[in-house]
Length: 394
Image (cartoon, rainbow, N blue to C red; front, side, top):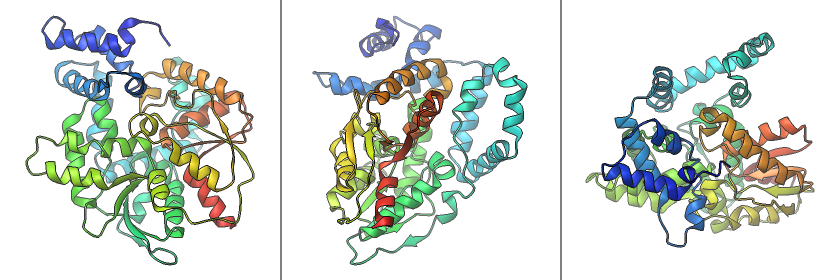
């Protein structure tokens, strides 16, 4: 997007090497170039040498967090978000409740009408805020949802942090699809945020704390798989073994946890989805989430599921190019994110699709913003939501 060598994976690695050798300070210039990275891992797919750029960039961000002093407002917001809201579901519920009031009381509409957001440079960020649900997924923690028909498996489902307050219906759709396929679904009450956002932001020790808690909460002998419907979460959970490699108490448990972790698309294809008589009559294009395609190397499973419900699947040009969401990137690097989204929507326009399907909540938020900005008559949906609709009509 910028055409700068310093913002390429090779350029960033060179800068990181200079820091490691003591030739470059962790200062504004380095931080700018590292912050601009989406962390989409497309470079890992493209790299013929197999350089693990993702691990390099995450460790660098951890060093930045420990050795660089950001502006006061940034420090306050980051610590409030990563150290408090995202690490505690009670705190997150409270803050989401405040945001729900802001969005549904008329206050957001009033604030927008005053022009205050534009003067503060927060207009685009406000437009990208997730819509907060009326009923959060946290209310279902501790519950078990029995399989329909002959039981085929039992899974522990990660409900997620942002997903629980903004995509609770997606979680419920996931449960229904799993039940329909003979899977008993358990929502462990002590589960936490997966730690993906913490790892990407440099809060690596906080990510380790969350990983340990999720291992304790979700790893059990009677659980056949640990399932998530968010590509970013699944990618982070599959990195627990690396995150806890030097933890003598959790290293082995982390490896066992990773071995059981599955993206919902991956799990359903491995299980073999039950056949449908109803077919989805819609033209669908599929956007590959970066952390499903590049990090987890899962590309065919979502397409197989879409084909199984009879969707007319139209391939999206550059389907595995990042949409610009990238966790919190669209909030902290809004202008760049919107330029990336513009390119994505140019590709979407060529498909003539009725529905843009994807498999990550961040992508859904970003693509919905793109559809709204363009005034397109397209719907953005998770693959599992489309399966749920097909099963309901069957």
